[in-house]
Length: 111
Length: 512
Image 1: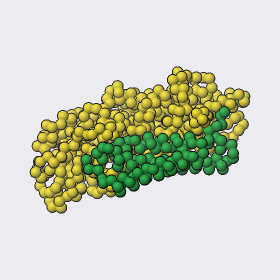
Image 2: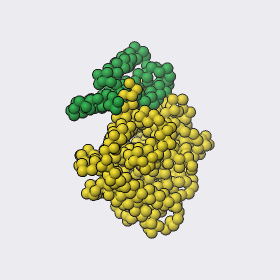
Image 3: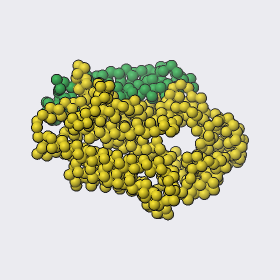
Image 4: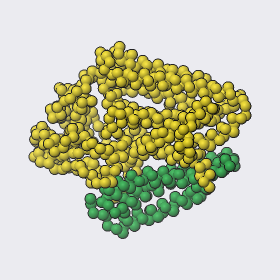
């Protein structure tokens, strides 16, 4: 009952496996989480239906909540692969969205 | 699944709290002190007396100083004396990369102040957000630690699902670990809204630096333009490249003050001496949460108003309100005291959490503590008692260093870091639990000495009664706190031989 958490399960499989599992999640949380948050900020800044200074302010305000959520997800996911998929998928969609917003739509009117 | 989720959040809370704990303890303590930055500054410059002053003549004196001492600067800033900060601060920017030049002037004469050279309360303030390091590096370290703390807070809330019940549970004497756990919970839960608010708003205050990608995407990286469009700054007018004559300042300030009812806080001259120069009158924040300064910009040559800054849109208003909430300029008296006490509780939450980590891993009698435990123990005592010892040393150095000493302000900083370093190293040579009691006593003694040395070295008598009282209370808390930690660790060791506690340790660890 006490050892059901994903990282705890790794702990009992041996020292280096546990360490690698922790290191993998930490790196994924830091870089993957930041990438998702950064892409979300850029995407929202370009697409929120407000003047651009307001969109940037809103997106930047939200970005740290998104980052925190992404980090929590990485450590809560059952396996590292699932955690990675859970970040790569939104990152890809957001990246596509940023690309589309920057190339297809004209820049919004200056505020 | 829900059980597993709580387990992984427990793990995350333990380790994110540990990793961010030391830096964030220092950030919380110095940030909490910064709520009384002006009071600390007044105490650290006992030659000055608080009092009102006329802003326009003071501004002219400041500009006169800058004209002779920084004629080639891109911009001049004159920060006007306020009732609680009776000094004229002048700053100049030579280039966008170079750090600002600065001088402190006597508001009445415009000459460099005769008050002792010190950073005053700004020392702790700057430490709070850049650790007195290179600004970019220090701010990123603080930001990273704050982000980890935010994660620790969220995972901590998930872990302590029984928040209300936990709050009324304080089993001081049941078992050592329970006592620490409950102390951690009480201080953490009681001020939980504050902890969440202060951590998030702190990150947002430097948010555009940490997360510049919105500005990158929507403004192609032109950060200045974002600040102008969101009504946070005036437009920068490039220099014309030919000299220009500026109209007298006083009438411009009089016109600006007729439009805005807040006190004038700062006068900025962009491109001084140039034909395209602008003069900007910056006012204090109107009553309310937002960190939002009304500004009026004049053409320096003609005196015509070129721009008015104010009236933000909702999102910009929300953004600056986050910053305002963090800085709490709106709070005075009782509300400021409440913010201060919440900050103290935040520091205590982090400190008890760090100690809890070691208490939960106390080796059984006869076992040798491992390297990790010894490292954490040393860092704990070196931070939790070392930092206050450094602060007490800073205050004592302020009173004891000769007023004429060259680089005096730097020496004050050296006293802070020297004492902190010493306080972190000495416990390594002492038995762990005795070190807590001894260093707590040392910290208490140093804080107790601050008012005494203050009375002996200045003629201000009882002018700083509140400051003195705060020092005595702080000293008492640290001395008793250090003793408590030492005692707890001792009692635990004595009561440990039975195996009964082991299961509890495991459970408490999962919870912690």
